[in-house]
Amino acid sequence: MTGRWPGGKQFAFTVFDDTDFSTVENTKPVYDLLAECGFRTTKSCWVREPGSGERGNCAGLTAEVTGYRNWLLDLQRQGTELGLHNVSYASSTRQQTLAGFDRFEQYFGHPPHTLANHSGVRESIYWGNHRVTGVCRLLYNLLTRLRHTNEFDGHIESSPGFWGDICRERVQFVRNFTFRDINTLKMCPFMPYHDPLRPYVNHWFASSDGHDLASFVSTISEQAQDRLEEEGGACIMYTHFAVGFCAQGRVDGRFAALMRRLARKDGWFVPVGELLHHLGQRQGSHTLTRPQRRCLEFRWLWDKIHVGHS
Image (cartoon, rainbow, N blue to C red):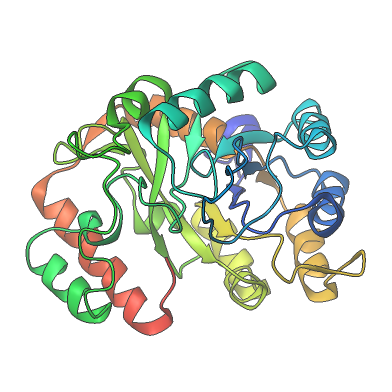
């Protein structure tokens, strides 16, 4: 049977790896395994070291560290896409964000095609309760006990951290909702999409939940892999490879076994940006309608009630 994906492949699979806590030591073995299996995925990075007195969240190495940057460049040469997780793990002003984008281009030769907001910085764009509208915003505020009410302001022009115009000019795809189902495309069949209520983001994409090792291996279980193949779907896993996937230089056995099993299937294994570009060409540019927005928001909140992921 001819598949629906390039090269006649039966399904698509990729990963967007949030860079929280990432070092060469705790992450490189995972990427060595991905390369061995033939997966091409997306690794986010930070490009700005916080200054003296700046407080960060979920610190890891940034591309300003030469040895870490050289490893990122090695990954890029091997086919890994590099994206952003905002420019730093500490909140950045507009000027710092602009300088960070310039630095990304200087290091890696092009603007970041993909970006995921970092929940630890104030300038995350359309984040917290700004991710949802109407009654869903009320439900979200109740679920989070108002912890994220107006906490993020990257899209607010009067904010010192405003960078919405930079995002619109220099980023193609931004991650938003995450779901438990392995078939991300089934949960969000019109991605990548533009939301007219959030005009500073060109296109949004969804992901499947793998925020930690336990959730990742649960989402890509043998049964889930087989179903993804049968459905001819597409999976974009959301994860933090630096958190628990590798200990003392050894990749978790269950994770490794599942990834090797998946690699033996007839999948299209390309980075997030390439997959989304293909979907955009195949399906055309999609503008989110009000009913579609409501459906996505309720579906995401339902998952959030059950597992509490981002």
